[in-house]
Image 1: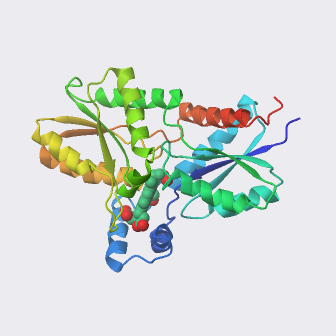
Image 2 (image 1 turned 120 degrees about the vertical axis):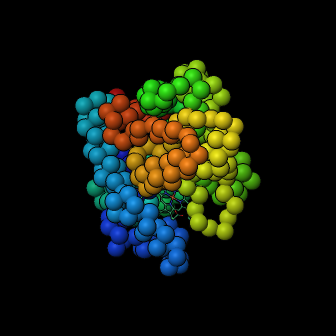
Length: 310
Ligand code: FEC
């Protein structure tokens, strides 16, 4: 019988209450406390979406559904563990728990489809660091932005959104992802190209006219961030006469602050002002078809590692 492997499912994590926001923000800022202005602006955004983000709850549902899917498929014997980058349970602690549980191989999967040295790689570095000098081998999945099941799911989401427009033939589809500091371009980071490849694959499947790419949710730092920013893109589209826009936040899989505030409130308010009808595609969350994509990624990575006896 195969030994049970670990599956480390990783997500950003969110504060569990407004009281936790300062510690969370300090963690995101690598230990530097936010200024009172930055903190109150972030508190304001959480308050605007009801006080807490649903991210942890959705991620937990995804992890539980993945466990059930892997058990049902029976291709690998796996124990799913869930770790967060910026809140408990932290990645290093979960990695240590896997070691204590006797896990010797783990597939590590970040719930973000596009790879950057500043995003996915920072999760993996933490896991690798915690696994060093232990018997645990980590088999990392670095990106999955062109997985056929993922492209299919986004295509369905975009068609459903287009069906809500009055003139789907002239509606513009924007694919967005979290912005990153512009310095990623200095080392030819694949992140911007991978977002474009995801968008092109969906556009090809749906025979969309020229899709548009935009970056959202840039951090409040001194860095220059990747652009064009999504708010700027909406302004430009309005100027050139666009009246209906779909936003497909392809860089995210779950609903959270960056979708519920940055798109549903901030972009929506701007779109209203500009006279644009905006429809946001539904998040993948724990849609069973998405969970099958995750299970497929895990199995493929494990078989690729050449360790399975099955
Ligand atoms: O729902 C929630 O509570 C959490 C939503 C959330 C997600 C998310 C995803 C990504 N981030 C990425 C990079 C950065 C960089 C900085 C940064 C800052 C923030 C802040 C909040 C926040 N992020 Fe985030 N991010 C989420 C939330 N993020 C809150 C702090 C306030 C603000 O700037 O709005 C800048 C750090 C710094 O200040 O030095 C860089 C990337 C992703 C997508 C990949 C992933 O999910 O890991 C990249 C969800």
